[in-house]
Length: 145
Image 1 (cartoon, rainbow, N blue to C red):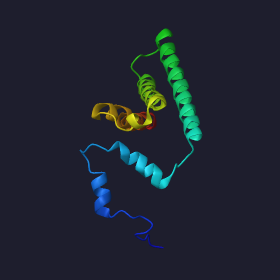
Image 2: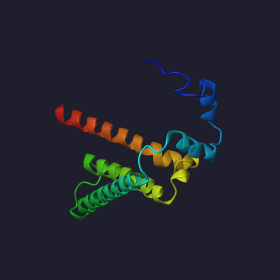
Image 3: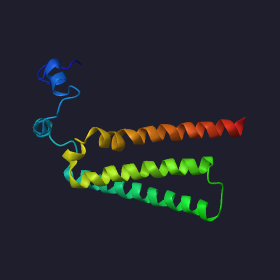
Image 4: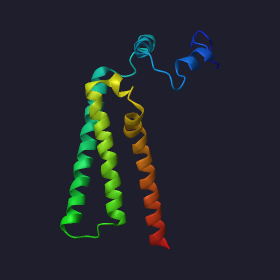
């Protein structure tokens, strides 16, 4: 079943012009898209999911923070796979908690951040996940070999 022009009225060139990189995004674009397509989820559900994610990420942050303090308190090896892994998790949870708590104030502004803030809140956690996976692979190969 092919998509017809009536199902998606914008041409490819128009869609490409709307989202070309390096240009400012028109704030009215979001409202016009919302009017065209409607809400994907209800605002109540969106607020509920944002709250749940913020609380879960906050609990993860507190748990990892306490684990790092216990390592320091009991005098375990400070530079080990465990502490590096926990530190990466702490940083990841802090960035995610910051991002989701920022959604409470202004969703539109959270989607239109400056490049550094955008990279820090959206891209850096993905890099941290990659580093964590690499660390787990390194630990696994060291244990197996």
